[in-house]
Length: 252
Image 1: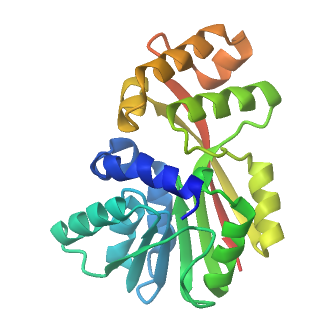
Image 2: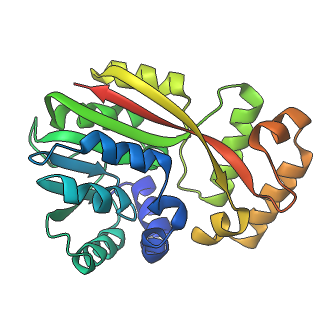
């Protein structure tokens, strides 16, 4: 495990229960879209890449043959396994490892699904290449994540507050960066659905146990941003704000 991977594990391991119980992660239009996409796929094997609190796995398991919940954090995987058992979801298997080196054979899965994980990947292109490798020919990948608005100042602001909140953050990529990375890995883009998601500031920082000094720095940045940034992120008096997200469907 390299230094960044160790940082990710340290950040998320102690907060595994918070992510399993997180309302922001437990529901959403992107998750509903994934469920609808996999209806009728009862024989599919699915990789939940960077499973976090396991919400993709929990929602897709009743629809498919097997879900492999894969994550860097052993504590997160233990929490997912416990929650799956409590829900009677016996077709969820857990496996530990990094997104950049997947311990699966070529063409192992009909679907690869990843939600709110890619912004932590140390090697974005390498991980996308691995996702392509383990997907069977004609298979489908769904990537769901926060995305950069693209413009320079809003992008800089977004990456800054993300890093202050969580030092394991790498980058919220723009849709253009996603498209380039996926196509370079061999994928064909089938569709992009853009959304907006409001984040309650208090719970957002509490979920990562962000140090008070860093939370104050985020609030300071929010207060100093020009009107166009405040307007784009819909920054509220209590620090709550709204981000851009995207679901990208790609085929092998």
